[in-house]
Length: 188
Image (cartoon, rainbow, N blue to C red):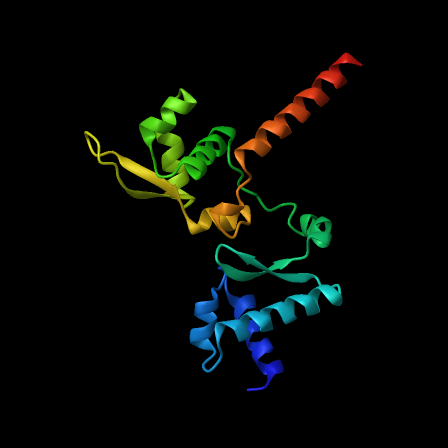
């Protein structure tokens, strides 16, 4: 198979997949090619899209590769999908999800002690959306479930791994800037 054909096959696979494809998945489909070769083909394809200012990009996300639309064309996509209902996460869901992401594996009781509210409904909602999963049981009285994030979580937030989560120190700096801006705006 020629290089152009391999790139075309990879392109077709990425286009037709609703989930990011890992290098191992691509290798199992593309007999005779090593993961380093496949990665090189992916990088060439990605570079081709960017150089020719195409509407599609290839990104590495959630441990695999996926086709996405180029961010520059978001206003046009918004017009196309303006009637489409986008399901957003509520503030309590985002807070609970953040606790799970940063402290996993974590129990419901540990989350509730940080949030000072019952999170049973929020956890059920996040489980239903496949953003979190039951990661096991804690070795403690009652053997409570512990929760962790899923691959769907990584996809939803466009992360390749949990290592890409912002550091907690960055939040403190951001909040200081936000509060300073807020105070100066209210003073004027």
